[in-house]
Length: 226
Image (tube, rainbow, N blue to C red):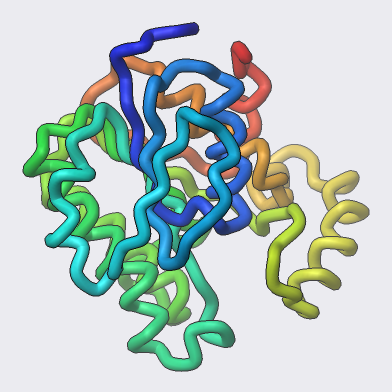
């Protein structure tokens, strides 16, 4: 596909899914410009990419950058990295919601976001609760086309070392062999597959709100056309 009139914006391009997504979008060759919102200067990996160093606490100052066709939100952190629940909530709730508001104001066609399996605003687990709350908040914005991806444990090479996730990831490769039938929903999934599914879904013409559990993400990723 090569629709050179389309542009994209990616939040969280340095993360596990975000990095894979940017590479996938470049290979897909659908967008003539991919805006990357980053905290610090980065090396431009392709001429189609346009990085902008921004203050995420004041995204409203970057409203003009949201004049794109599609917005991909791959923002996410952990309590350990964020240090506090307040800091975690800022990254996983405040930033995505503010980005969605700006996207809506600028008439963006699609908003695609990665949350997590188990996302539920009423969850007893803070992580899942915040993920559910961000989904709920985005739903209320009535975006033209909202796509929510709920992957299971993500597999891939992170920039930062997370001992617990490294152990879980190694175990998951073995456990996935036994995840059949109803258990398929809980299989760990590679970040590059989530990225592939996001890129594929961005080509859909569907409007409204759409949820993609991990198993559906796997299925869509296999259909990629690039």
